[in-house]
Structures are given as C-alpha cells and as structure tokens.
Image 1 (cartoon, rainbow, N blue to C red):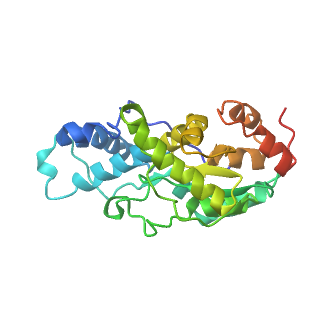
Image 2 (cartoon, rainbow, N blue to C red):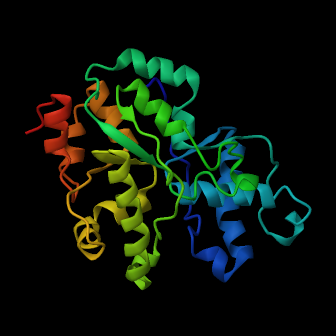
Length: 260
C-alpha cells in the first residue's frame, strides 16, 4: 500500500535480543552480525520492525567494523547497507508524501502520545539517531494520518521490557508512570513502535492501573495499525480485535469508523 516491497532475509537467525549480550558478548555479536552479513551479500538495506533487534543489529554492525572486529567469527564489509528502524524508514519524506495521498479515513478524532521506548533511539552512538531524547518519526507519520499528536515528556522512558517476568513490581511502577503522563497530556490512546512496549502497556494494563491507583483505560496501538486503518487496509479490523484493551469503541466514536 505504501509502494514498498519487502524481501525476507533468507536463512536469518535470532539476533539474541536483550539477553545474549549480558551472557556472552562474542556470541551476541556473531548472532546479529551473521544477519548483517547475509544482507550485505544480497546488497539490500535492512528494515527492522523490532527495536530490540534493530539495536542489536546496529551494535553488531558497529562492533564488526571497529578495531575489535578480529575478536569475532563473522566478517562484514561495513558501510555497504543501511539498517533502518521501521518507524524511521516509513518516516522518510517521499514515503510520508505517498502515504498522505493514500489516506481515505483520516483519524482526526485520535489524541495520541507517541511512545518510542528506549531501544530504537538510544544510545545514539549506536543507533545514529540525532533526536534521541525526542524522536519524531511516529509523530510525523501520525500527523499525515490526521491524528492529533500530543507533546509529552516520556517518549523514550523504559517500560521495563522483559523484567515483567522477573520483576513485575518494577514494571508496574514504570508503566504506571507512562499511563499517568499520558492522561496528563490529554491522550485518548498511546501509539507505540515496539512490540515489547506494546505487550507491557496493553497486556497488563488493567492490573497496573489498579496497582497504581489509576482509573480509565488507554488503548495501545501499534503505529502500522493506524496506517492500515487510515489507508483502508482490508485486515485492519482483525488487528484491532486482538488487543487486550479494546480500541474498537475509541475508533468508532472518535474516527467515525465502522469496525463491528
């Protein structure tokens, strides 16, 4: 729908995510670096939907082109391909222009805060993000879809990620803070670009709201869902039905969409 064709990386492997580098840095770099090498061999840039994977791939690319590259088994050329976070990729001006021209259902009733999490923009020495405390890729995408994007102070605060398994008490505090700041900004939804953030904010919202003494609800939407809704993707209704915090009422009331 956006004029972009994606090709799955052949024989890709797990990047090690957030765990491998805490146990064995060499293995972690080799895991992510192997994917970078495969992309280099076919000469295509990488577009990465998961900020955790994006961060590890960028880390491997930097490490394997540094003076420490001899410590690892995987060899890459470096500089041959670009590794993109999905939101940054879709926020390129030519894609934004194309996207705006394709909107058939403007989402003008949504008042959203964009929550990027901490992995796609930081550390800037790895990610290359210039606006690492105030990223704007999702903001610019949502504005093209007619969404009212609200300023707020917690765009890149951590949600606790996988600590929700070992330390749900800590995640409750971190996510509860995000909900409080979202309400204070006047938001009726939170839009995310990270699947781990989406899980922590959507899956556990009812419990965390109760633990933190909050009332109400905040549907949590992945930014590509909103692109699909605004552009009339045939499967958009199915996506919304899989949420734990039901966003359908919000979309029907504020965006004049029939999603039943």
